[in-house]
Image (cartoon, rainbow, N blue to C red; front, side, top):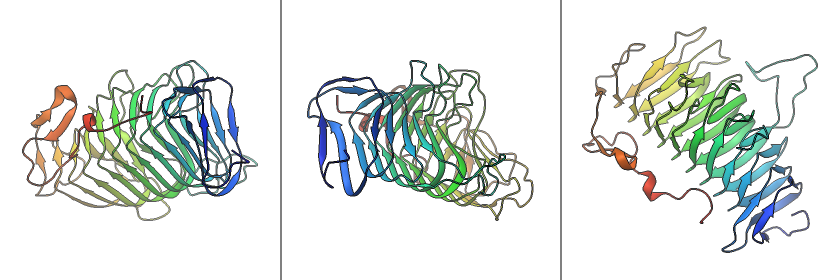
Amino acid sequence: MARAPSGGVVCLTAGRYPGRLSFSAQHTGDVTLQAAPGAHVSTGSIAIAGSHIVVRDLWVNGEIALAAGSSFVTLDHNDISNAHGRGGEGIVFDTSDCTAPNAPRWEGCEPQAPISDVTISGNRIHNIGAGHSEDAIHLDDWRNVTVSGNEFEHIVETGNHTDCLQSVYGGTNLTFTHNYEHDNDCQGFFIKDGDATDVSVTDNLFLRDQVGAYANFAQIWNVQGLTIQHNTIWDGKGLALVADEASFTPTVTIDHNVFSNLVVEPPVGTPYAIAEHDNLFGQAPWSFRASPTDRVAARPRFADPARNDYRLVHNPRDIGVDWSPAGQRYGPPH
């Protein structure tokens, strides 16, 4: 990868590459590492330190770790698992900034370079949580990150606070869209321990997040410029908003979602400024005043739950997702 020219493609032949693959190069244009056409390529963990690196169509058993300062990295249509007790995460941003508002601090900590301009798209991320592994995606100190069109399956809490996506040290400009989370026992989306700005959570489908005993909501703490739209979060847990001594006034727009439950926790310090309308709730919200355009339905009519099609049958207001998993492709092409 270091010697590949910008715009180049490095194809791996079929087989197992069990050791840790490391790539550290600064490119001016994308260099792609991918399976050769028709090849099944499996690897161990992958370490990335550099810029303009694309990893595509691989079967990764271990974590993909991005080093501090990495930028313009794309992880596209890989199968990522961590099921053999090696520890670590699925995808991890390996950096920190203890000076960020509400971030963890320790004696002698020094900020590291953020990780920026990353796209995580079309991956199948599964079987994480056992053997001391932790989060499916763990973002630290991020800038300009898009997580789109991924499948999260069997991300199961085993005592390490396992989340489908967790953010620590905060960041700015995160888009989490069109993702499919199902049959997990995780916090589906978790921002905490570092204030964040400009976060968009749109068009995601969360189902059956109760395969274990880790009963907790997806939680979003201290975000300014938060948008939550067109999601169907019908996973038995729902979503909670938390404002806790934020360094700014947290703000959120919530509209056209289907929620099994939505909770706004009592604030510590400045509360969220909330604009909320046109949502459907599985149970009547008790922690905030619902909009007149909201409705409550404990058993809404979905198109075909047996096939995980959770589009609403009668939907003149365009609430929730408008897609089903059967029409998507996750992971490598074979």
